[in-house]
Amino acid sequence: MTDEIHEYEHDGSDDSRRSFAKKGALTAGALALGAGASSTASAQEDGNALIFPYHYIPNQELEVLAQLEQSITVDVLVVDGETVDEISQPDEYNGHVVRYDIGDDATGTTGFLFLRETSLSAGDTATLSTDASMFSPELNVLSVSIENDG
Image 1 (cartoon, rainbow, N blue to C red):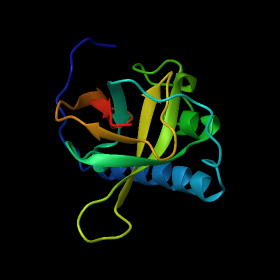
Image 2: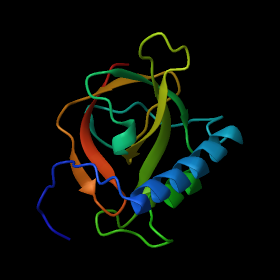
Image 3: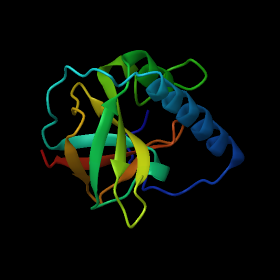
């Protein structure tokens, strides 16, 4: 593991797209099965979050739709069943389904957000800053500051 922080650069490779598509499908399937039906966690203080580059929209309010089941979050934060150098214990993270309400599209843009050892509740809103950096190239996730709007 290196202490060097990599600024985000979109890879665009077929492997990263396939990996993203598999993880997104897995997470979306979990939500469809009601994975986010109950949430007992407390609100997130201002801090850092992990997010896929495809779901990162800085300075735009997002709303938490649901919290993912822990097992789904762990599955998304590993590669081929193995942990990555940057996340030795993926069970310390809580996954969330979030939506940005942008433009005239009533459904908005939906994505996934991960917080370490804390979480947001359905209905909470937050904003991601513009300071994103590559957290894990292997997972293709960014680290970004998050401000809980309440």
